[in-house]
Length: 210
Image (tube, rainbow, N blue to C red; front, side, top):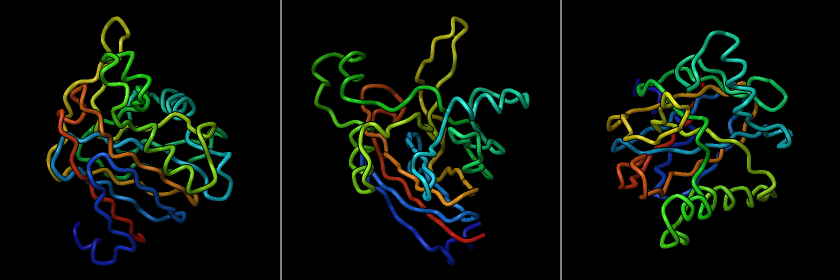
């Protein structure tokens, strides 16, 4: 499917630990590529026309459950807004599952989970705040996110556990925008759990017209 890249309207390598954002028009396709493997990619989605409409993990999973679906996301999953509308559809996926329950890492959660020595380590929440500020938004606009390529199994006792990532080098996920979208990405800087194989690496984001 590399021929799509010849017609790309956006093709960016996002460095390890860095934030990124882009606006997609309805119908455009975003491919997120895990260049070296085992790299978690946190993402937020907002309506470009009205950022008050934004991604809702609860609405997404509730609709998926009603259709007999799983607690994670994969090809065919529809990402829904807090108004229940389709924001994007996962149309291709080499990983097989993506998390939308564990949330984004933050300095505060690092401290609680891993000790005070991690208090000032860079985290996804800070990346998101950096990108939100570019669009006139702030921490009040932080909502539930998707963790692409992140392996978060639910244990029999209901506990969420972050395990080693399973995406291979060059693995990707493709999303088709179902409305004009603002997409914010944090190329996760976490080094205290295995979601990045303890070694954050670059990703590539490509957008094209279908």
